[in-house]
Structures are given as C-alpha cells and as structure tokens.
Length: 351
Ligand code: PMP
Image (cartoon, rainbow, N blue to C red):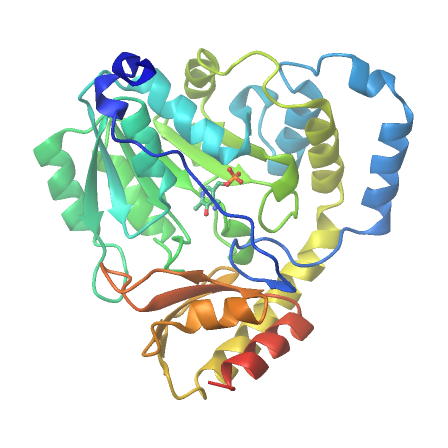
C-alpha cells in the first residue's frame, strides 16, 4: 500500500483544498477587485507576442524584478528574495531553519499557512493567542519566547483575518529581545503607512514578507518577496528551488511595481469603500460587531451563523469560520468595489 510509505507525521494530513465556487461577487480571498490599468494590460500583450519569452527558462535569480524592488524600497538587490507567492517564502524560511521537532511561535488566530508550513517542515507550531480585541500582547510573546526557545517567530501585521496591527515600536521591542529569525508578514501593509522594510539594517534576524497578490492584483501569478539582510537572503536562497518563479510573473510584477502610483489610487478607494461598508454593516440587525481593520477586509461577528452559506446562494462569496473556536460566528469580508459592496449589503438586508 502506497500509504505505508508516507512520512509517519503526514499520515493523517489532508491536502489543502479550496473548492471552486460560482460567483458574481468574490469577497472571500482579500484580492484587489479593480482591473489593471491599460499600461499594464498592454505590456502583458506585448510580452506574450514574443514567443521566446515562453520557450526559455526564466531568470532563476529574478534579477530584473529584484532590481525594480530594490529601487522601489531603496535597498540593494542583495536584500531582496522572490518567491512563488509569499507562501513559498514562508515554506523556504522554515525549511532552511528548522530541525525536526523545533518550535515556531505564531499568533492565533492568524494566517493558516504558518502552522501548516511548520508541520510540513517537521516543526512544532506554538501559538500565542491574541487579546480579546485581537490586539497583540508583546510581553506575552516575549515570555513564551523565553519559555519555548523557538527557531522562528511569525508576526502578521495587519493580521489576517482580524485586521489589527502591531506597531513599529512593539515590533522593535520584540527585535531587541528575540535572536532567532523574526518574520514580519506585511501582506496587507499597502493599506497602512507603516512598514518594517529598511529595519534589517539594524536587525539581521528580521525578514519582511510582502506579496503582489493583494493590493497589486496579481494573485493569479503568485509573486511574493522578502526583504532582509544579505545574510538572511543568502540563507533563504539555499532552499529556493531553481527556476521557481515563471517568466511572466517576474515580468509583470516588475511592471506593476514600476507603475505603483496607479495602484495607490485603488488602495485609497478601498480604504474609502471600507468606511462605507462598516457604516452599512452596522445597520444590519444580525451583525453583532465589526472589528476595526487596517486592511482590505473586515472581520464581522454575526448572530446568523448561516449567513456565509446564504450569501453563497446569491453568488456572493465571503469567508465563514463556523461556530467553533476563537473566530466562532465570524465572517471575513473583503472590501470590494462600490458596486460589489452595495450588492453585498442589499443581499444581507434580505435576511
Ligand atoms: N500572508 C498573509 C497574511 C496572507 O493573507 C496571504 C494570502 N492569503 C499570504 C501571506 C500569501 O500570499 P501569497 O502566497 O499569495 O503571496
């Protein structure tokens, strides 16, 4: 039986699965709802016209994209590492640092990939719960750090799915005490003004992860990157697979970052739409709480546990968290375009 050959610790694992659902309004994955600008679309068409772009292997070192990112963030190319989504970088960081049985500290609730990737890399996830309002408790994290002596620590800011941040001052408090790699996941930091990028000059155990999947609308092309000290980048590169990031993804991510001002307008619109959505959600009788958010999604506590399923019947997708755990009776709604948000509220009001 093929099952007898599986790694013992993976025997009970089920594959990650995200069922395809029909939709008119998709507010379940924190993507950018706006279309790309014509400049960007035309560049893709030009790129596809040259079939050499497809016949050849991509640049395994992602030189042009890393140069563009280095220019954008005013760092050196040697401080940038690219991945097939930031998911791949999370995996590679754990792959290069963990010995079997090593512990990894991470927030709960937070992005599920930290836990999954830790287990897949034979590590042990150790979660620290957030405060009741989902804020981070720095002293609690430091106490746990001293107790469990982890190999890596993850912080997600703004945190997915709760929308709260950890302030730069608090992150620096951690960095003054934490010696192991500290991963700051800034997948949604385009929606706030703060970033830890640049601080690697002071802390060589810091790595900041970013993605093109959210504010920059390239989720389908899977491009993420990390910015860190040269020694951190060199270390992660040990386990990055050859030719990992395909040529179209590298090219388009470069075009997008070079045209970032186009996206800034859309980021502002999302922030305005978020305010409209909060005001309107609060008027719905079965909405118990809308948590404050610094990102392009809202965590909402509802007293109608079936609302995600009901919305799905109207082809509106949101993320539901069921009735158990710290997110019991919560849904997460991505902030959409004005029309999408209006559609959501209209249907929610029917129930
Ligand atoms: N970090 C966070 C907090 C996320 O929410 C996501 C996507 N849901 C990712 C990382 C991964 O992004 P990607 O792999 O698409 O770059």
